[in-house]
Image (cartoon, helix red, strand yellow):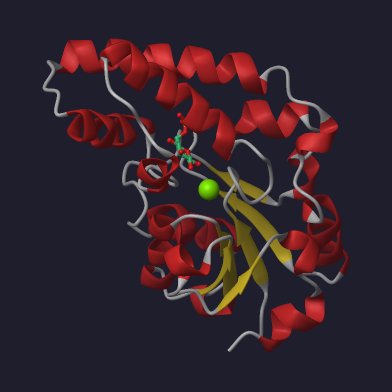
Length: 215
Ligand code: BG6
Ligand code: MG
C-alpha cells in the first residue's frame, strides 16, 4: 500500500533540467570544450560540485579547489538568472494536479531534490504548500545515487520506505530510490531509466490507480 510520494524537482515537477544544461554548456564553452546533451545525462540528479567534477573530467581539465568553487558559483549565478524569471507554465504538465490528487487521497508528499535552489523555485511557482516535507541540497551531505535524500524524506513523513514511491528523471535518482528500498517511477527516456518499476513521459500520465498498481 502506497502511503507517500517523493518527488525529484528538476525535470519532474519543473522544466529546469534545460536551464542546468544551458548553464553548464556555457561554462564548458568558456573553458574551451563542447558539452553535449548526452554528456548532460550524467549530471542529472547530481549535486553542483559533483556535476562540476564530471564536467571537468569530460573537458580533461584539472583545477584547484578554489578555482572549482569560483566556477560552481559562476554556473549557479547563470542558473539563478533563469529560475528567478520562471513562469507558472514552466511547471511540468500534470505535476500540480497529481500532487493535489495525492493530498486529497491522504497520500503524503515530499520533495527530494539535490538542488540548493529548490525553495526559490517552489516559492516562485507557488508550489511550496503542495509538499508536506521538503528535503533539498541544503539538508543532505550525500549526493544521489546515495539514498539519503529520500530516506530523510520518508523519515520526516514517518512513512516506511517500503510504502513510498519516488518520481525521478535521472539515472542517479532511480538508483537512490531503489537503494532506499522504495518503488520508483522513471520520468523520461527508458534507455536511461530502465531500472525503474514504471516509466512514463511525465506526471500528466500518472493517476492514483496507476500508483497503487506499481509492483
Ligand atoms: C538536481 C539537478 O536536481 O540538482 C542537477 O538534476 C543539479 O542537475 C543539482 O546539479 C544541484 O542543483 P543546484 O541548484 O544546487 O545547483
Ligand atoms: Mg531531476
